[in-house]
Structure formats: structure tokens, C-alpha cells
Image 1 (cartoon, rainbow, N blue to C red):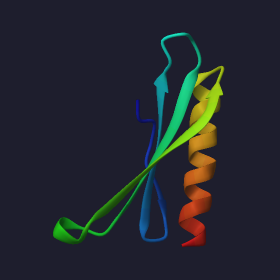
Image 2: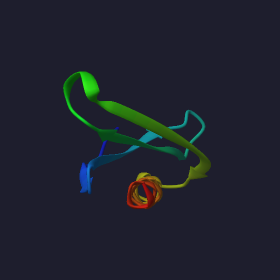
Image 3: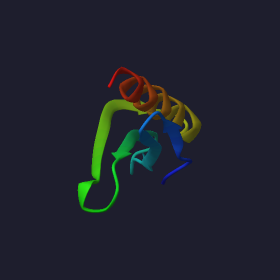
Image 4: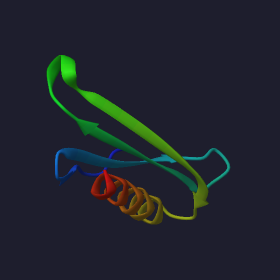
Length: 71
């Protein structure tokens, strides 16, 4: 499930979550740059399991925006 898109410089950061079958949530983030044939989409999935969807989204947003700011 995707939450929102955040522009960070030339990147578009999209935090996402996925519910685990046994409870909890996984966090992931998509980081896009470029347009058309020159576009790139990186997806990072994170190991920690979160108790709430909101916590997973905050983590993904934090990690994604930090990555985009450093590149």
C-alpha cells in the first residue's frame, strides 16, 4: 500500500507498507528519478517489522528521504 509521494530534489520518494500474514507491517520505499526511457525506480525493502502501518510508513519515509538527500 502506497501512502504519498514526496519530492526531494530530483527524486520522487514513495513510502509503502505491506501487512504480514501473522500481524505487523513491512516497510518499503520507491525512489524514482528521470522521465520516459531515462527513468530509474529504486525499491528498498526494510527488515524490521512494525506494529502499525503508520510506524512502517514513517520509517520508510525517513529512510527514503535521507537516501534522496544524500544522492
